[in-house]
Every structure is written in structure tokens, then in C-alpha cells.
Length: 166
Image 1: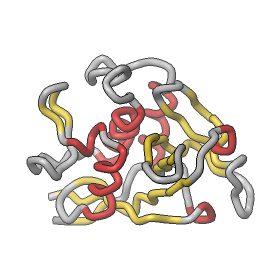
Image 2: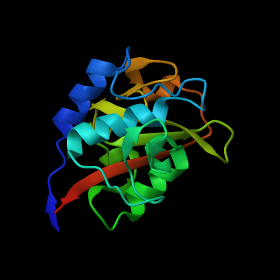
Image 3: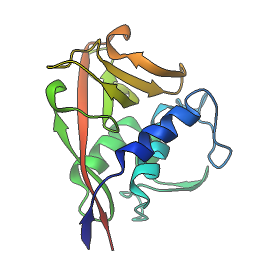
Image 4: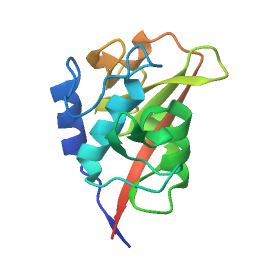
């Protein structure tokens, strides 16, 4: 396997294109637990160009009935990105000061369970603040939404460090 650069521009471009609509290649999971992580996975795929077809613990989407839990589940995506030893995107937990466009943010509204995933599309300020980190997301569809407009108890950032390919 080899490590390659994550294409942040492609991930962000995908997010802008599909923030307010649905790509017909993928199911819409609104009403089935939410579409937020599905949308972010699609953007991550646009930036990585590879899925990980490992049964159960991989990260892939073939169709609504043949997908990895990490493709659509908030905690499962976190687990995959931060422990991935196979092909696909790899992430580390990060702090607000080190995030970049194309990185992932997850929110906990109740302080215990993370329940929302968004993709960072712009960062400004030195250091950045929740008001200068802008995201795109599904469920309540948005693009360029300031992170500080969400009401959340906890936040975690996932910085995509690289992509592993064969």
C-alpha cells in the first residue's frame, strides 16, 4: 500500500455541488436516521477516490442494502477514519486550530452521543473560531454554515491526513 494526498478541493467541490440536493447514485437516508454522514462520506470519497470493502469494518457504498456501517453512521465513521489500517481515508482527531477545508466535524447535541456529521468547506481567522469554520451538511441542508450557528454540547474534529491506496 502507498499513502497519497487527500484531494481536499475535490471533497469541498463535491460538498458545494450536492449540499442542497441529492446525488442519485446514493440513497437518501433522511427518515432512516439521517443523511448527514452519508453526504460526508460521499464528499470524502470524492476526495479520496477509493472505498474500503472490508466487511463490517470497512467504508463503502454499493447500494442501500450493501454498504458499511461507517458510510452512514456517525460513530462508525469516526471509528473507521481514526483506526483505518487498510485502504481509504485516514484521520486523526484534531483541534479547532488545525482544521482545514475537507476535514470532518461531528457534533453531540446532548453532551454524550455524537449525532451529526458535517464537512468543513472553509476556514478563516488566525486562530479560527467556531464562527469562522464553515460547513456543508445534509439533514438540515446547508453550505457555508458557520459552526457556531449549531447548538451543541460537544464537538470533535477529524483531520484527514492522507489516503491509502494499493
